[in-house]
Length: 206
Length: 115
Image (cartoon, rainbow over all chains, first blue to last red; front, side):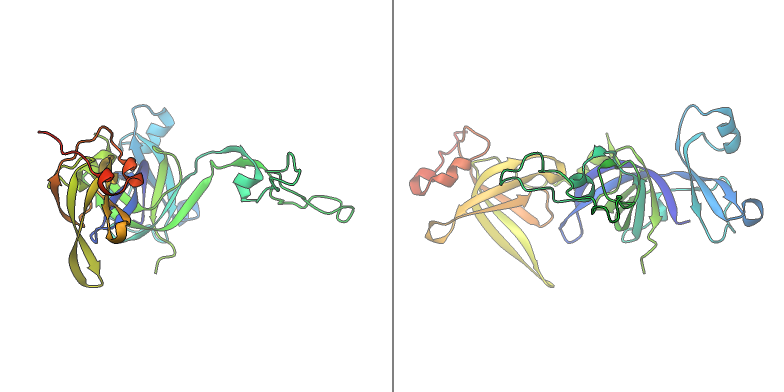
């Protein structure tokens, strides 16, 4: 198993063994259950469906899907090469990872609403002085004239920002406590406190 | 108790002497140089004490050679702090003693607290 679902708790800082301050994001990770095993014959690809977060109410189709498993709020799929050895109902917790591991954390970033180009794309805006008005946060030119006579597709402009799936790669695990279902990773992770996150073994680690 | 406070609580140090702004203290800091370790002492007046779990810190001000003021901020719960000695309790009417920066010589003294 290389992934676990969890809830972002928030950030704090702790001292490492060298006495240096490390900023840490705490994740309440697991316990997670395997809720479905997808096989090549049955589904055309191999994956595991994980469930996390006990809830009180579920509708009947959801309860039927989970069968004897506890009622779980969140279900997410992870691709695996080989489903051999995995069964529905298997339970795992934060002990999946150990201190020093590198992980990728995926979550839904905080929504920023309709944001201008400076915030959304890091444009510099216009000059603040020299008789300029209404230009301080403007995008500037978005294209030429009759040739090509249109604005190119993908031109970076103002619009909805955030509230999208974001993955932060190669975060170091600094704290593991299966008793409290707690994981601590160095640095920040996407999303608001209480948001669902997925912690996976880093794809790009050596 | 929420998880953040629980994690922070494990990090807190209760073995250190209690300090307050105005105190004259001697801070023993472990300094790691490569694989060597030594203890450095920094003595001065506690100018401010900022609270907040593991993020708590305090600033000590001392007058170094040629009357140059040196301020150093330490994380209060850092394992690098060996010990803190309180030499004197100063009497203050405020929590942040920034006014010490604009005073020099005799004017920068604090009355001793009556206990």
